[in-house]
Length: 476
Image (cartoon, rainbow, N blue to C red; front, side):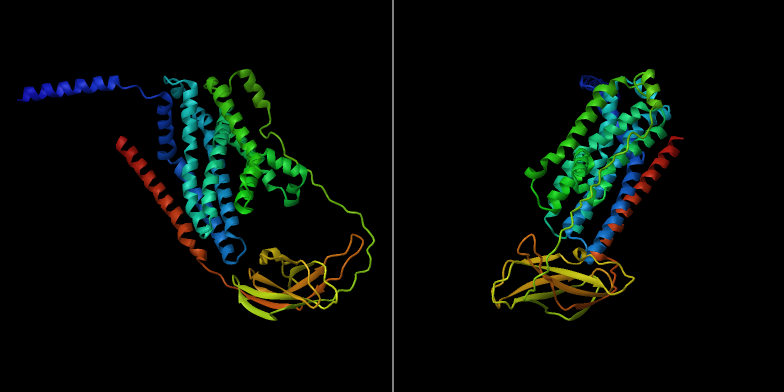
């Protein structure tokens, strides 16, 4: 009986060997991908980046939620800004991961063992490239709960998820490829990371231009050719301004072109020449070392629009009258007041078109200047025409965003009859607005998200480190 069992066992082992031999061997790039994924995620680098990423989003989301309680930002803008922060941070992290992929192996003296494997140079680069790309979908998944709670049920959440996933997936290969391309030429990991940081700052420069500089022809062109700025401009138009893809699709050209160029250079030019020393040849390496790590400084042209002074005629008197439905209000920060403005025409002739503008004055002489656009969604309203003895009513909303004493008043301005004439403004009585300070610790119910995600990721990181230490101890 025991002899029969031994024969069956030997036969089963032979069958298993034959089956294993008949199976096709795993492609070398998949072996390299598995190795890189283990080193990146089980080794703890990617979870550490993800933990820091969640803290960044938690802080920003909490600030946005507090601003939402004060009606400073609509949900669309908050979701857009959160998505923009998630894409920016993810691209930077993937650039760093790519920059460490080859020069880090050189510095740790492990690249030689990798090159001695039966995998081709291009397969090695493909495995490392795909492993670095895995950070983006995980980072987007971490950002989704933050965007969902900030959307407050607005349909912009679904649009942000779809467009964010698409646009992030366009730029992610470009920045991983840029990092790996820099790493390909560098022997030192410090040099690779320093140059990658300079490249990232170079891409961010157009995004940091003042608003007026971005509206000029030079500023618009600089944004259009910059992949990050172009994607952000595209997202803002679609998510915040409700524009269509047909109007702004050209702003996606530079991200696509950058990705195609970088990936082509990486796999067609750099990957086949991968070796122990940085670069393809010593001659080129010497030239590379002489080059300055900071490549160029982006500039912008700031145009000042000047208009020639023209003589003004005396303003014509207006029979318009402006009144408001409220004299004073005492509220807390985060509250809103609603009132009506009545515009009356006491003339015997129909009035011209009337523009009605809201103004807010801070009564504290040392207080900040108030921008009405931050306080009300209705900065100006228009009345086409008022018949004789006719009145028009306009409704207004003011969001109390900062504590203090303020005066809210309305100004009605009839449209001038011609380019050579002007008109007389009419002001209403003021509304004395007193805003008392009030702060919520959990604005919009965001606190569980801002604390929960970093806590869960932090505990996962600690567990991962503990398992690694236990494996090292068991291995001796």
